[in-house]
Image (cartoon, rainbow, N blue to C red; front, side):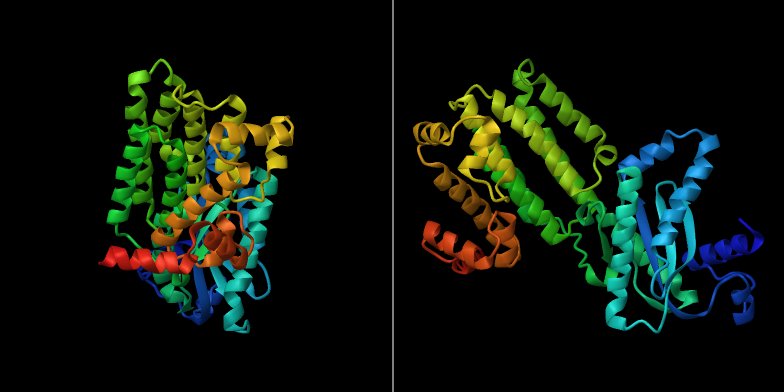
Length: 403
């Protein structure tokens, strides 16, 4: 790093902390170190995900500098694009990177975010191809003079409290993100329901509830500390429930306990947390001796519970189990008491009803999340199954809850 770059970094660091340098530089002096007072700027805070942090932590010192230089160049290259230019890249925290970006005033205002999103997506692809891992991006607000970048920086840092919701490989802009810190009674009611289902070993409703919790957290943009608290509570409740049968569930208890202890190190985002618990839940429900189903039906139900949002069919599941479609169809009727299509529809409708009452998602979003590619198809199936439209169902339950 040359002398000008060092001066630029120090000057920028003072501005980010909103401490004005002792000697304010004029426009000419700023230009000499590659800075300009006027213009549009935005700060991007990048959170490194676990695989990248492990790479850094496990690397010998003699290799680390060269590795970081290459890594940082990937970040800078991605944001040199169509009127967007990196001003400075800072390593202010061990597993975060702060990128100050200059945006040309010639860019149409309504396309700036789209260009930044394109840059982020290209960076994400490069990091995945190079390191099989990515980052989470938090953009602050746009500012119109360089001395105000501290304001943008604070807002980008605020968004980092929501990285579990934003998710690996995604970015969000502060002005587009609705921040919610309230831990509502809805989450507490989920815990109560979850404990009740556990006591009755009601695995099907547990699967549904876990999905509802995930979507509720995403919709309400609950911050990291509250998201972590809720899932740690779910993990702990499951451990307590299984502890009387520790000989049977020893591996599952150990896995859940590790999830609690190593939470921030194991999981990049809410999807990781969710998938980890579903994997353990699958093992618990499969070894549950109270479940009367045959192994084929247990596996078929597991596929439904894990892939209900996809276009799955009886043929697909039969092929996955290496049995005939006719045989699987008979097993469903004899053991579950209904055919495959009815069971799948009922399961999807159960999740749909919880999403309709617990979230504000539109019908297309809910439909695609449970396996129906269009709102029309979702409405048709819902009305056929429940004798009421999804909107009528949502309005009725909202009115009931208010009264």
